Image (cartoon, rainbow, N blue to C red; front, side, top):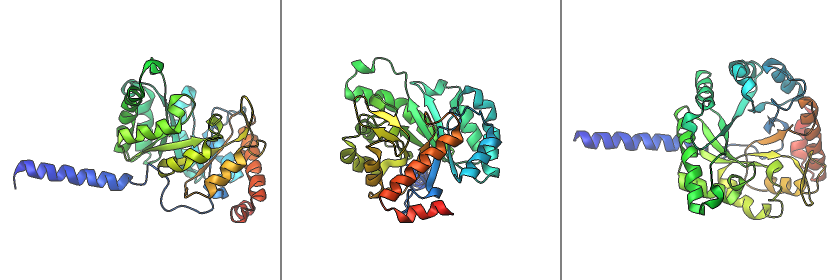
Length: 306
């Protein structure tokens, strides 16, 4: 066999391995739980920078243990960068899974000073997780055609996804309003990118414009769905984001998610619920339980009595 043939064979084998490795990372794992609202399937999210007590890594892990959370999606600000290693160590010692690491980047992530720091800390600690990614700062998006927008956003996303893949991580497109947050646009991005480690993280607290359309587009994003983060939504103009159970729209959305094929994790958000993260997380868990009681989700409710 020629050297060229052997090189092509090696490249094909490598691509096959990568596809097999990531075939389920762009969505929820095929092995999940039918009790998606069970306590052990909940992720604590928007905790770190939204805590009046400014808990450190160990205090935060202890608080999550106390509340019964087994997963954390790590939100951070610049002041928390020196604590990254402590955070990873605290989570590990308290048996809490790092379900995701938040990243806010722009049109040129290769110049992003924090991206290599995040990738390095994950690599050194041997953590393969999701990177919940927001892309912003692309100029003149309003002047672009739809295809130009897709290409402009896909460029930084592809760079981040490829870097994440090198350490066994996946990337979740995170809806936070604007063009980037529209589910149909996210689906077009995924189709264009053709990266098996890219999926979608869907947030109720940024779904103000999606309430009426939710039953229509939710089945379409299901194959790519990595996480669903809950919050209360009160209809009106404008729609108000409220604690879970205090709105009039989230219960139906929660039912739709349960009755779908989704088997991934569910996020409980503290942001804007209460100044103390412990109080906010507790409030939203209690609100979820009330909805589960009304919807007779006995299997999930049993997990909260342990």
